Image (cartoon, rainbow, N blue to C red; front, side):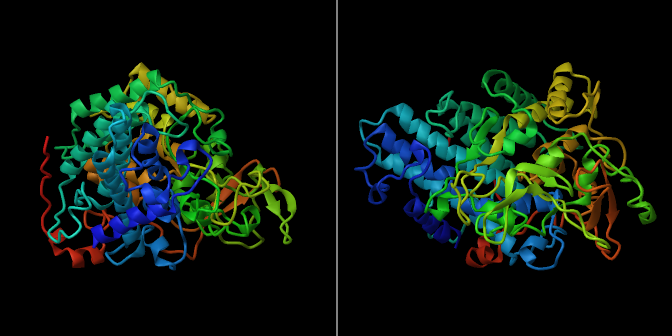
Length: 580
């Protein structure tokens, strides 16, 4: 089953590929993408990998990305029981028949299928005039994308089958899952090939480079350091590699942190100085190449194009709000009678750039009147009198409508990119690896890097040492984890950070998740407009507020349809046999 739909998806995606804003994304002739007559020049070979930058990732980014990364991770929640696919990941109730399970699985294997097909076609069809450098770059791009998809699969589902040739594997009914260490070794090899064969600078805006691959290697080695860890001790060799690659990218890539933080998400920000890898979405007639996630997360139709703002019931969780320094001042008080009594405020600029609280003003976003004409600039509304709940709705990736985007948007066809890797992650990766198997570090470089992230956000620097307590959140601090969550909330990365912790300290991961309040609350401004603080009150009539996570439900189950088509996937996982 898996190979039938992903092979079909690969060809369908190529067929939908159309022209757009960057030269390398312009459409090649549709009838030549699998024809040797097309692969005659370097430019044609590189054109064959262009769909891997948008079309291939379509299903993942439309909804699966934040269902896993943010809802499952605990930064975002959906309050109502239907539709189930939104609610399944709030309290870890996803089953083999859940839509969110199948969507995530299919989305990643679609990317893998298209990457495999690109590698197959380039190896088989590239003509004699194609240079080795162009051929290896294109294959490097495909292997980079394939590794990224596998990294999402293994952290979401655990043991999954490794497929490298969809044509040969099409009718293989005896597929088996591969072990988690095998999948991570496969991912590492793909990124290493990419790092060796991608150029130092983008040949065209948006294409990945050696630094993109080395950044992914830093991420990968940090995660692999905990895979199979014994007694909570991570692999020091891999921690050292994570530090090395992260520092190489920081010091040699030429990338810099964008300031202020909010500019990372103000259109047009695509392919900026901090970006290491983005999906390249484009406005046009082609639905498959456009950003449709925007329609899903915009909190109201008046700021969207043609009223396609369907995300008004998504909200930051109480737990997410509690991480912003000073915002919920009674966050450790379990007495509900004290909720809403103390006003909170935070200097953390990431809050306003990520979620909207009542009174936040966004002059870059136009509100339209019922006729569709510009009315005013957006100030997020205050709750009504007697309200028992409201929402800290999504701001990140909400960039406005046709009036704010120069007319370059239509319903479910937005032009702005989605980040997959930013330089900021390299700073926090270095810090995490520097702490390593201790619970703190006074490494001056690590303190400098953590403070680069904090001061960019408007916070005071810390003197150190940096704390990463093993028993957090039950005791002690984990400053690295908390900065990670605040930095990357709504960038689909929180879940993967929890999995990284789970590899070497599962109880810590369970404690974090099981203490995340993921239910309704009221955020009330002290005045409106121009509030100077907010009081937070948990909604009293909501009784279920925290998940109950253990080894039994930590990973999402494989889709039932896959198990029914290939029962061998239910057998114990085996190590993958590498041929080189």
